Image (cartoon, rainbow, N blue to C red):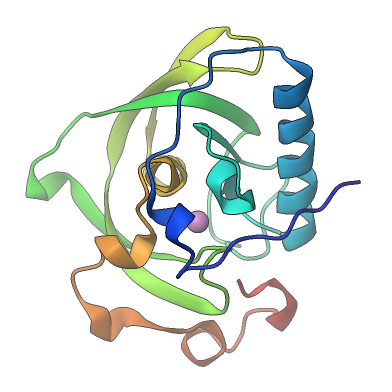
Length: 182
Ligand code: NI
């Protein structure tokens, strides 16, 4: 078990573009993924990006084998390791956007209503360097956009267009479990 501290908004490194992984299958990369999985599970997160634990690499993980109590109404997103991702929006007009509530382990205790593209194709590599791609929609597409944004130095409040829809989770959603609120 290796739970790492999660960097919070205000940390300059969260605003940097992360570097591409070149060394697939290396012990360092596999250890990073173990640390990320332990840290995400400990924090009960929907996803985690390497820069959030201070590692400057294009690595994200997301998804679970069971419904996340932070997002009880969300569809199941399969456990995924995604490295050096590329996103292709299938409808990048304004009509292709949908609003949804997001939280972030780097912005603890807060939620905001964020526009995201509903449909996208993402591609990248697993930890062994095997290429894969998926076409996804809805919550799955939202999670991918949120996590990949961490690799481009973007936090979800920077995507918001209505700051009146940003607040503390215990105020906005008092019915949620207070131990799963960030
Ligand atoms: Ni996040």
